[in-house]
Length: 81
Image 1 (cartoon, rainbow, N blue to C red):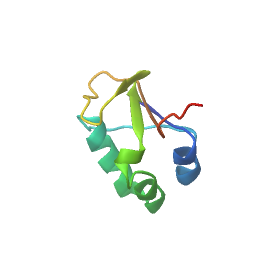
Image 2 (cartoon, rainbow, N blue to C red):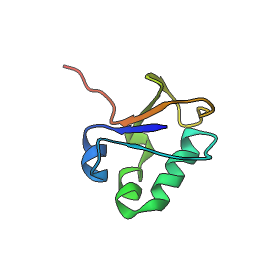
Image 3 (tube, helix red, strand yellow):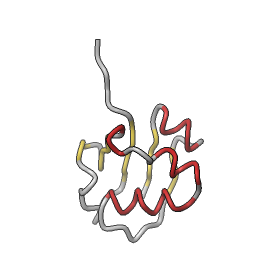
Image 4 (cartoon, helix red, strand yellow):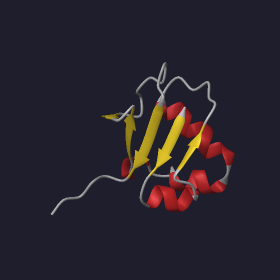
């Protein structure tokens, strides 16, 4: 699946996107797998309350299932003004 990173998440990880092979059943499991890769991922995902996630371009929660998913995106909460 494609994993996309936006704003400071992209800056901390150092990539805008990557292809990931995973057996994770949920977004939370995917985050755990990514965090275990390298410190830069662990830092980016250290506070999930500061992150939002979209699965196939729909906002969802970290307990969302990944079966059949093509894209997961991580980004900070949007602010308006």
